[in-house]
Amino acid sequence: MPEKWMPPIYWEGDVVVILDQRLLPHREVTLRCTTARQVIQAIRNMAIRGAPAVGIAGAMALALGAKSIREEDPRAFVRKFFHLCRQVKAARPTGNNLGWAVEKIYSIVVENPQAGVEDMRRLIRKKSQEILEEDVSSNLAMGAWGKQVMPQGARILTYCNAGALATGDYGTALGVIRAAFAADPDIQVFSCETRPFLQGSRLTAYELKQAGIPVTLITDSAVGTLMQQNRIDVVVVGADRIAANGDTANKIGTYTVAVLAHAHNVPFYVAAPRSTIDPTLSHGSQIPIEQRDPKEVTHFLGRRVAPDGVPALNPAFDVTPHRYISGIITEVGILRKPFGKAIRKALET
Ligand code: MRU
Image (cartoon, rainbow, N blue to C red; front, side, top):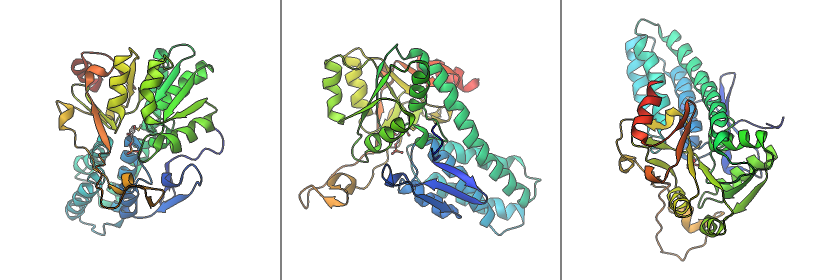
């Protein structure tokens, strides 16, 4: 990472500092959150986004919220804290990491019934930092596994932003790319712009440029042409939620890329930590898909581009069926088909 690299979220004393990703790549502005409500708002409006980063933000929101619950009776505290957990969990529905992080934090409270409220607050705050640190370690491990399946001099396609900005740091799919580049400076990356929020052009291009990794931006609709012209060797993307059978929710448009990759015999990898896996869902069709404001589609840079009165649909994620996925790169290894069995084993590790 270059020295001036700013992580997406971190503790500074009792303040949660969030890099406002809505303003990137032009301005690096931070939000300084002192309440759970401010962090929840930053998750909703996508100042912070990317499933693992949202999970970390959720954990930190709970630490801030625990401080402001004035009860000193443990049972009264836990009741109020449970209510807050539900609010945090509902901030964005598709990514699994948010609910996972909330569960991790809530279990501290449940597992320490004898602890006083002040101890609970301290343990919650500590756990939120551990969740961040473990996420970064997982990303480094994913990089080490994932680089092994990136061919020499690979021309890698990625979608959305699954980088340092979307995690504690380093990234999942971009972590694999960072590790591959460290081993082989001949690789190059094609980043899809990722309509409508432009995570690819605003964030992935920004991150890769900062890391000195050659990146070329393409429109989402250019993927088929590039594959047809034999200009892509491998695809690696992140994930928001992975069902027990390997079906994977990721940014809207990922499914299209996966089908195209399949049609052109291009390997398609998903990189995600185990906290993204939801073993309670047997199929991807059960994954809740966030519907965002149609304005993100009808407007561009605050100006309406579609005719007045024309409605728009704006599903934020889609589900790639497991049959199109060559492998799922996790921190404990690369999972292969049949994914059901591999996922069960990985979760037991
Ligand atoms: O709507 P976003 O920007 O939160 O969507 C992000 C993605 O779809 C990422 O690919 C996914 O969260 C994985 S990030 C490591």
